[in-house]
Structures are given as structure tokens and as C-alpha cells.
Image 1 (cartoon, helix red, strand yellow):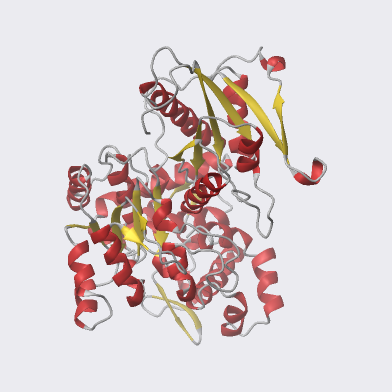
Image 2: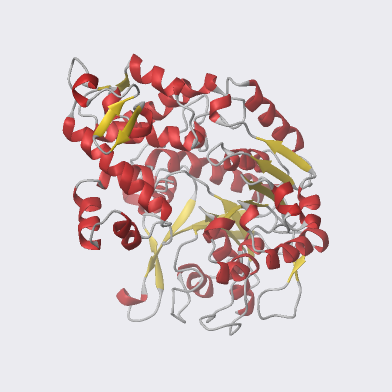
Length: 529
């Protein structure tokens, strides 16, 4: 944060607003009425605003808001706070993360203020998930944080204009403050692969070496290139680098280059000005500017279109970019971490990836081993995912010895992500606490399919492979059905109509199956990816 030495010496109190960024900031979609934060600031000017951003999209909205506030003539100082949580409705992890964020904000403010100046804290309860707003309220109501609370009232309920009112927290003074339990605070990144980001959680030497290298180079500004198959934990390593770097107080903005529609890729990354193209009704900052002062993580950079690769190179070399439709350069200050499962050297040779960009990216290269090369981690990870799910649903499921053996035998082409999905899938359909082989996905069953049906590896007929203790046929058939549905969805990029056609089903029948029979699979496996 910039020093406040330029503030008037007469000032005795500095007002600081803390709020989450939401989908209505800086403006609701297709609406010229300012959103919650901008409306509040126009009615209640403050000196500093800290905006809690839970994803790359909200970091970008924060930059849009900063620009709009400047256009409105506000002299407020704005700071973004990376509020990453793996689950935006998980009360426990949001509470822990919020307390840590508020403590960090408080320290940052007091470090830059003279002792003679006091601070007035304000919380705006408007944007964010209900869980986030609830805990922002509780942080003040339980006297964890000395803030005045304001509740936003949308225009539809306040006579056509956004309003806000102060919330009286006196009725809650009886509530005892809740403190973080002494000891290790749960790490919000553990859900990625089940290991602490500050110390090595892997038992595999190759993975420990990758983590150690990531922490060693974190303090430098050089670009980093992460190489490895899909699902090996590249995002987790990128976050480790960011959190151990001098940029840790800035945003961490993740962009999956393979998921951006080609015709929108330039606007998504570099932003655009109003009127640049049909549908560009407002200015947009873009993901690169959203990472200002922090880290930009470009996942699957091998899928970035050639015409944008040269523009990205310019950002790396000159620290400037041009939004779509603008001739005015914008200065940016970001550290780039890129990742891909592709062979970039081969892509350079066949002309699908620029050689100059590749040379610029591979200053520091970290290769992440696939799960099949780190067998030591399979069962600990499986146990972690199982324990996490048991806690979430209040269950007590466990893996049979036969299942553990099969997990160790399997090659895991989808790596850690596939392992997590396998545990979720098996838990969803197993009606018994002990998870057996019959509820594992088809590819882990060590069986093959022919036109006559399911056979064992040696060609046994179904009666011969039926376990002595029997099996849950309904669960098994659901698993088989889901295997084909998931394959069809992946092949069609999630297009349900196209997937239904591949399976010889009508769109209505396909959607009905997802809704009535396969809802648990779809939620835990497909959407979880």
C-alpha cells in the first residue's frame, strides 16, 4: 500500500472500508446504476477500501471499480486482497480465512500511518456469498474486529436508488469472541491435493524436489513455466510460489487459456474499451490488469492463440498492453507463471507456438511428476479425500484392502484430480460404509467389455466374476451408465445435446438421467473439475 505521508497533517482519523467484491460491482449487468460498493462510496466517501476477491473474475471487477471510481472523481485509495477459498460456501474455512485477512489488513494499515492518526473501520455487508457476509457481520458483532457495519439495500427495495444503513450490533454484545484455535490454522489450499503448501506433504522425492525448487525461486521476479500432465497439481504449485513471494499481498489471478472462447480471448486477457465491438457496453480491465501488483497464472498456455502470443510477449518485455479498441498503452506490473501439459518444444518446431515467447517463459522450469510415478502418495491422498468427504457429509466410509490394492495398481492417467473424483464417485454410490471394488469406476474394475457384456480380464463370464459376497447391482449399473455419460460430456466439451446424440438419447432423456439418477455423479465429478 502507498504511504499516507501525503495526507493532511491535520487529519486525526482515517476511514477504512472492508468489503467483498460481487457480481454487481462496479455495475450490475446491463444497468447504468452503480453497484453496491461504488454507490456506497458516492454516499459515504472513505480514505481506503480493501476489496476481498475470491477469484480472478472478482479481481478484474475490482480493477474495473477502481477505474470507475476515478472517473467519478473519488480520491479513495483502493487495495485488493486475494481471498481464495476452495469452497465459497464452507463456513469453517471462510471464517479462518477472514480472520487471517482482517489481521493482515489491520497490520498493513497501521504500518503506514503515523501513531497520531486513528483508524475508523467500516464493513459493507452486500457483496459475497451469504456465508461470507455472515462472517463479516460476526467478526464485528463478536468484537473480533472494531468495525461499524453497513447493510446495502438494493434499488428494488429502496425506492429505485441504492441505499445503505448502519447495522446496530449492540444486541449481539453478549456473544463471546471466537478465536482461532492455538496451533496450525487449516491451510485453504489443502483441498487441491491434500498437502500443506508451506511444507512438503508428498512422500515422493520427485514431487518434493519440485516443491523445494518452487519455494527457492519464489522471491525472484522471473517467469516460471510449470510442465506436467493434467491434474498433477500445477495450480497448487503456482499458488505456493505466489504465497512465498514478495507479491503475496497482491492478487493471484488464474486464467485457463483452453477455456477461453477464441473470439473473446483478447478481450478476456487485455480488456477492452467501451464500443470496441458489438456488446462492449462498458470498459473492461481484463485478467492481466486484474493481477496488477500480484501474480498472473496462465494455465494451459499452449492453447493461447498465436496472435495473442506476440501481445503477451510485449507485456513480458515492455510491461505494457493495449486494450481492444484503444491506442493508449496501459502499464502493468505482474509476475507471470505459465503451465501446460503440452510439448512446447515440439509446438515451436511445428509453428504453433512462438519461439521467442517460449524462450522468454522458460527462465525457470519446474516439472511435476504424474501420480503413477509417485505411488507413495496414492493411499495418503485417497485417505485425505475420504476423510474430507466423511467430515462434509457426516459419514464413516472407509476403503477395503482390495480397493487400496487396486488404487495402487492403476496408472491414473487423470492424476490427482482423477483420484479425487474416484473417491467422490465411489462414496456417492456405495450404500455400505466399507467401499468395495464393485463401486469403483469401470476403468478400475480390471474388466473389459465385449458385445456379450462384462468379462473379467481372462474372459470370464459375469457369473464367474461375481464376488462371493455379492454386489450392489443397482449401484454397479449406475456406475456403468455414468462412465459413458461422462465420456460423452468430455468429448463434447460439456454440450449436453451433443452428448445425448452420441449416446443415442434424446436431449430430454439425457437431462432427466442427469437430474434423477446421476445427479450425485454430475455434481461430484463433472462439475468438480
